[in-house]
Length: 108
Image 1 (cartoon, one colour):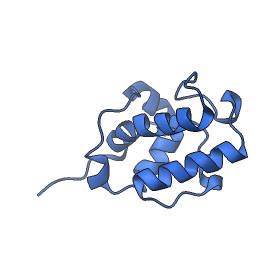
Image 2 (tube, rainbow, N blue to C red):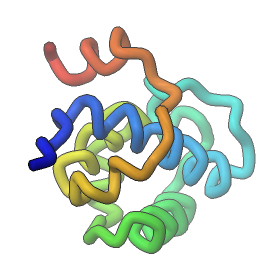
Image 3 (cartoon, rainbow, N blue to C red):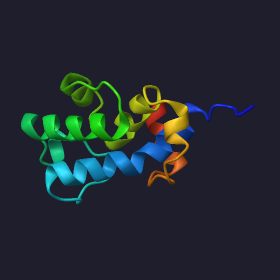
Image 4 (cartoon, one colour):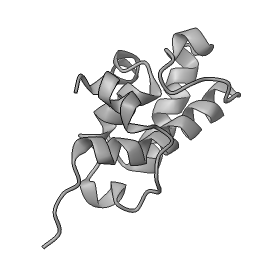
């Protein structure tokens, strides 16, 4: 029997994918995972592109409103970790976030 990884472990695995989607959508990767999407050059059309990319890559339902409600890579990764099936996140590599960043974002 396989146990489901905790949400934070899944969020760490998702963070690299979310960071990559942001970099592709923004056209640059000059941001930290704790920086606000709008403050690093994001706008509504960019959010729509990134949302579509993440929906396609992860097979989840994600609205632009949900994306904007979780305005950092860290927060969005935590949100998506609860949406993406655990079996899917198990196939992802290690994320780019340290547990200290997740601790501050998750309120742990």
